[in-house]
Length: 123
Length: 105
Image (cartoon, rainbow over all chains, first blue to last red; front, side, top):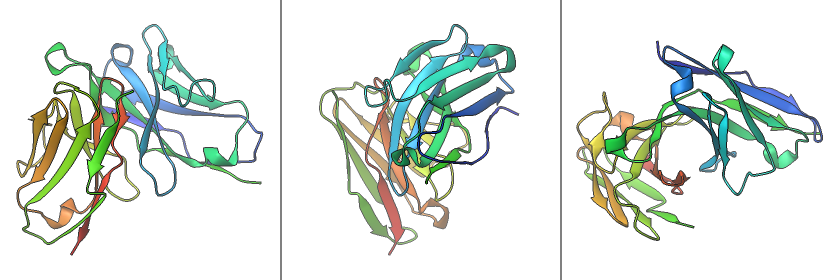
């Protein structure tokens, strides 16, 4: 089955670090970009960044540049999103999504999504 | 930066209604637009890509149209399973619209 499996919910304190994961299976993980999307409570979707696991080429939304780090380990088909010092405002659901790109369909869109990882940051 | 504006933000409709959601880009994005459906507590689901191409497995009551700066998502006959929030996304820079919540009237 083609799927993205995300790590479980996290509860952290402000200032703590965190790394959440997204494991792909059922397809060639190194052939598709993986994106990360934030959804704050009761709010809309925000694109954070995207990584190509084949060579770890990474692009960030200007809104998230410097705030998070996206990485990947192609040997275990897993992408990561990490924070070095969490803030209460990082409380949100975080989704990973596979970026599907085909020349005829343009720059590509997110065709496969993980179920999300809920991150709660509270003192 | 290209801005994406969705309207309305909330829509009240009945089962069987024809529903139209609009997404406007601040500058031309050709046909590089996708539509997603999100139900409470669930991940988004791709419905439409390249403005009007129906993703495999998506019911044919969903359709998309438009190019350039104005796009629409239409549900021809609203079904109980369709009450959800819908997002457009321009995939040059992956920016999402603000979302449209389709509620039961």
